[in-house]
Length: 272
Image (tube, rainbow, N blue to C red):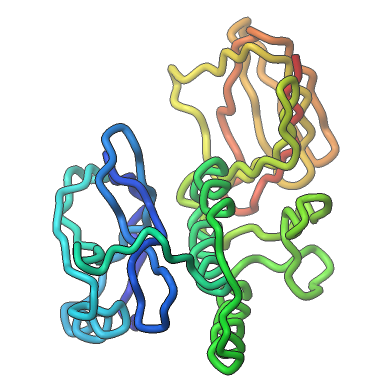
């Protein structure tokens, strides 16, 4: 939309994202369903009223989608927002999305910095190949355009993923959204006793009272950017690329500053 402007990433309480809206192409599209205790993440945009009819047509209002309004708590208070939700008679839980559609949803989630656990839930949704090759190629081209909105890797080569499709390789400096409304965490390896994650910050810091108090040891290295950590014993540590820290379990600490102009990329290993 020409006038669309990102406000912030928000959480829809007691809602869950599901691929179960019956589409004209025979596949499943997204909708939000009621689920007590669940949370759905979304990006809130502001746009001119003149652009609303075009958005309605693109999103399929009246073709299986309905418009729903609700108040959401944002940084500036509770704001009334709308989203498109599947009509009851268009729900079909037996359907699956096409691969390209699921990848478009994932591209949006990554671009807006949704939590890593939420993104993993989307990744685990079953999907299938689009049997129409012309439609598939059209939307795969659109997907490439969406991916181009992400920051390219350090060599300026075609976009790589932070985690490749097979989960066995990736690039720690790739797949970083241009906009980071909140800190981005991406799990790389996770077992019962260990978690390795990439963290991307840009001007983010913990609240003054927000100490991390972890039950696992943490080894962390800063790969790019600049940051400052504080500990509850009064120490402060400035970090530059290549600096690493060993933080024992139960050592209270917090990030008090990260570079607001450049993404700070961390590699953290949490272990028992």
